[in-house]
Amino acid sequence: MEPGRVLFLLLASMLAHIVSGCAPASAVTMHMGTPSNYRGLLKGLKPGDHLQLAPGNYKEGLPVHHLHGTPDAPITISGSSEKNRPVFLAQPHHNTISILNSGYIVIRDLEIEGNNLPVNGVKCEGHADWAHHITLEGLRVRGHGNNQQTVAISTKCPAWNWIIRNNIIEGAGTGLYLGDSDGRAPFVAGLIEHNLIVDTIGYNLQIKHQAPRPVLPGMPHGHNTTIIRHNVFSKISGGAGAREWARPNVLVGHWPLTGPGSNDLYLIYGNFFYQNPHESLFQGEGNIALYNNVFVNHSGDAVRIQPHNGTPRAISVFYNTVIARDTGISLSAGKEDLTDQRWIEGNAIFARTPLAGYPSKRNLVGRYQAAGESLIKPFAPLGQMNLALLPGKWRFPPIDSGRLRLYLDSEKDFDGAVEDVRFGAYANIQSKPERWMPKLEIKPEFYSAKDLTQK
Image (cartoon, rainbow, N blue to C red):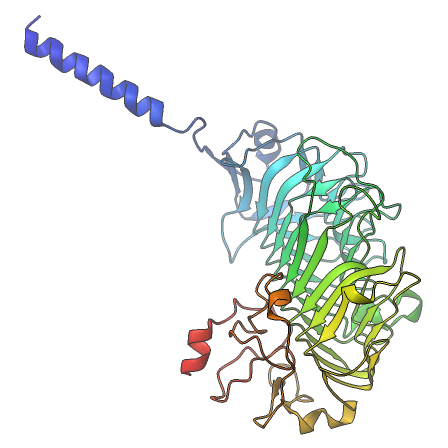
């Protein structure tokens, strides 16, 4: 063989070796699923695989059992069309999407029709050992209002690093039920954002209290944060009218009282809480930072920080706008003296009793009927309601900026404008910016401060 030919083959061999060494360990494989073949494809999914489902009615559920993606190569199961989605139809005695001992899974863009059967839409099963790094995105869940125990999305085993995003849940018995009643199924380090949850019989969202946290491979320890942001929670109609099923729109329970997880924190911000005929809009205990939210309840209370299965501990409530017929914000501290860990400042509160259990100084408070004297359009219909402050000379309270910096996005108002000296959820921008007027839809991504100030 000629020397030039030998050199060419040698270089080609070396290049092939280099390219193959740089290739991903597992290539992405696209599988096209239909109602007739998807169950067979599901069982063989490997890290990086994407099962894309054609439009149609799927009647055999979606068992996500013993499927394992990786951080760099999750397993994805999705619809193939935004306008014409796959529809998973509930069947008796089986939860429609069942999750068991699986991790690094993305499930998105599916319709889940409950047909008013007593089965859950998505359930991390109680007999599972764990389920972690699960993303539920763009799901539409309806027809799960058989009774209060029927849940749109539920976790009943130790679950961590879940993302629940951009989902619409309408008329369920309970919207999101994360954890178990005995505290032994902790929901850890979750992100719940940009969901619309309306007209549930019981809770829109409940995260259960937690018993001592189990030690499981991969479960995060130390200081963890669960974030609940930019959601719309409403109980304006539907089963919310039954007093025997009265529940707050959102309830968060305490973290483990001692040991791993006891210093975990809820960050709850940028949410719109709207109407509850028989209960408060929000109830919580444990370690909570509640800020930049809008609360409107023309039938009762807005925010209750009080013992449930434990007690309130480190509590920061600031920059919220609250309109409530009865009590705006109440703090029932429990038996422990943790005064130095409780902080309620910078809120705009209009209620029969604006603030109970905490001094009202450093908050803007007024009577429920007088909200129109301070806010632009507080009693207008959805889509027209504007809860920003009327232009005026406001003496804003001095807020500990060092404390604010502990909390993600605390300097951004309800719409994303940057201002960390104000009353309530809205920055005091004089140029009348275009805003999202709260209504019952998925809250859009907030504007940047530049967008707001230039309008």
